[in-house]
Length: 150
Image 1 (cartoon, rainbow, N blue to C red):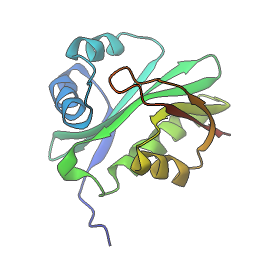
Image 2 (image 1 turned 180 degrees about the vertical axis):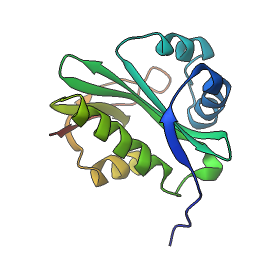
Image 3 (image 1 turned 30 degrees about the vertical axis):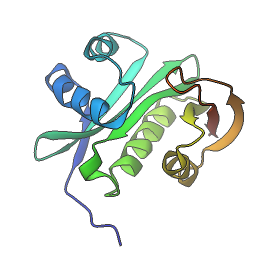
Image 4 (image 1 turned 120 degrees about the horizontal axis):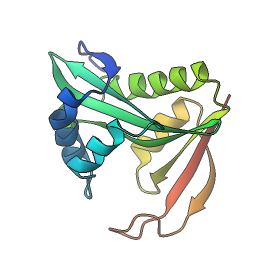
């Protein structure tokens, strides 16, 4: 059984950028730059949420609202807090926001070899709808395009 930790989710503000960047750097082989996250805060299409445990950023999720669709840009949970329901809660929060904004669905790309992420998304109703060949520039790995329609 997975033990739960006490955390809550709130909108990402400037005060969380250092923590978000630390989670990003801990999670991805080619992390987004700190400046990329700064720019996202002023992007009117961007919706970013953070998961906080004891005032520390332990995870985050981002989505762009383009026309009537949400496009998840990234979801990450710091390694020592994975498998505690944080990723689930972040996906659920983005889904809740998308529905409230009357989006017709949410899409994302995930590395072909990232079975854990694909299981997470499938658990929340995302299904594969195609492959983007050589999508990831660092490894030339393919991406699975997944969709959740409302």
